[in-house]
Image (cartoon, rainbow, N blue to C red; front, side):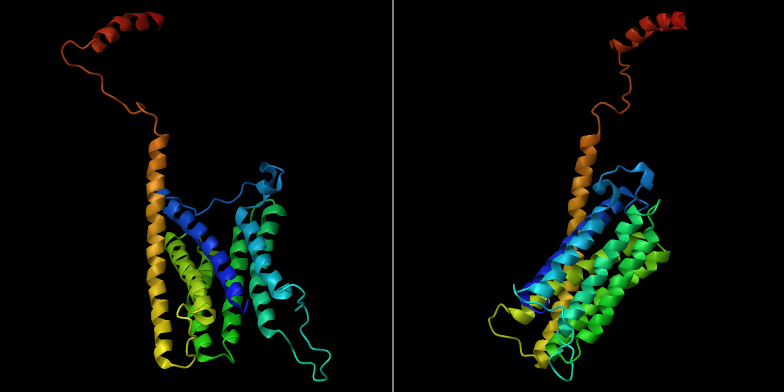
Length: 295
């Protein structure tokens, strides 16, 4: 992932997942839901096809994780980074350090998806606490590896990755809290906001480090340019809030529009017209004796 393409792919996949989550949060708040997403029915009450047994989120975790892991090992074609030690060197040094850090990062998201599938398919009832714990573990591992990832790097790379750790840490903290205190709307919103910040910042840092729009590489130790890196990150905090508000607004329009479509015209109570000359009271009085006789 230590290339422009690798960072862009990871950022886009994170962004897709977070946009989906933000829509779920917005609709849950608009509908006043108690749960963000209801647990699956017991296994014996679900269908027998695989898409009825497993949630979309679990499959997405597995597929997206494999999308970023496999290129780390085998891209460009003909490359093989499966080795960890250079056995031809008498000192037996470790090789491909960054590659194995990236594989470990996304391997834990793959593990989270596998835990989701096991929870949903192999158990009589879905264990949502276990699924949240596995996802929290993935973000905690990501923070730990990012701490090590910034060692022996330039000041610029250390700064952008240190800033990236902030939203990752907050998302992980929210997930840890949700293991014991789930279904808190304020935590939903915080997680969606920080998710938008970390995905947008990952896209920005890939352009900043590998393809600056000016065509001139950033000075990796200039304090003025490093100050602007922090300024840009603060802008992303605001951008994430604006994006979340925009998603909520669009979902609100859709929700109210959809609610109006579901209303049946004329289903509401309408008072009987009682003005002089109205035929309705006369029809009612004429039908009343027949009703009495039928009873």
